Image 1: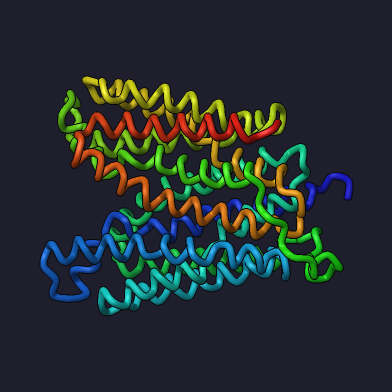
Image 2: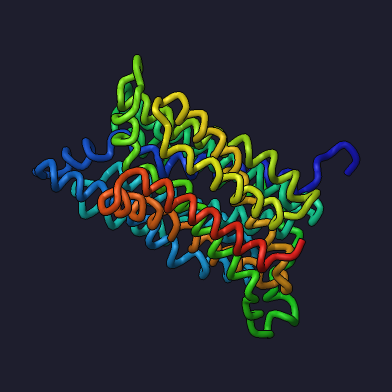
Length: 393
């Protein structure tokens, strides 16, 4: 209708806000998770730390395992049904977390959240199918900006709600926000691409992945490793350089935040450039630039230089993930299998989220903090070379 936004833009508004809300729900517990678990049982400090790590990481493990399945079901039965399933699952899990009485229950609920959730990956699949090919990068960039915004806002909201309302109330409030998202998804999301189950080609076997598709998947894992390897050692990095008048904890938090903020800005910009010059080409340049900006971080003598370098790195690497998603859409031959491909991409993304901090910690422990930056830069450079050798356009 004249004067009305295109259907894909309405879908982007709804799924973008839904992704923002779901990421808030996933990260809202970060400021108070150890304290919350302490109140659920008689645990020592070491046990509390262990439970906190298990509870938080468990979601990513199950999400990585089940993402390809939900992606394939999106191909067969439609993305909207998958979005509704994921948001209802998250609503139930988040609400029950507020009623948990033991660390075991929290662990089980976080595992179930990884299985039942997946709204953001479902939104990625929907926009890959519904957005015009000429604006695929822009759509993925806007969606990723919403996801990054949620990861920034979640801990802030969690700290404020826990301080002024209570820790259990934080789960109930986030569950209520997800319930609103359920209603908006049911009412406003319109899917124009028919599920492949209703088409004759649905009986055909899945198209095998080509080498360049695997390169995009491996680059997705490499990107998360490059972004997250420093997180476990950030306190030690900041502690050993000049950071006055900021406290070490404050300076470390700002260093991580400016990286995410640079990525948020970049995701909006690089998506548009990807539509104009080619998604895989822009991703390759982003990796190469990121590698060049990671190496000087090992020689930073004050936290302000480190902040500038991390912000610049965020600009270089932050928009690479939507470019990789967009490139996967452009290179995958059978659109009826796009959900399966993007679901697998999400799995590789979660693998990187787990592997990045582990690699950073292992390298810092065995070789020293500076080598963490060298190894991380090597990962980014390897991804740039991989994309340059295998991608076209």
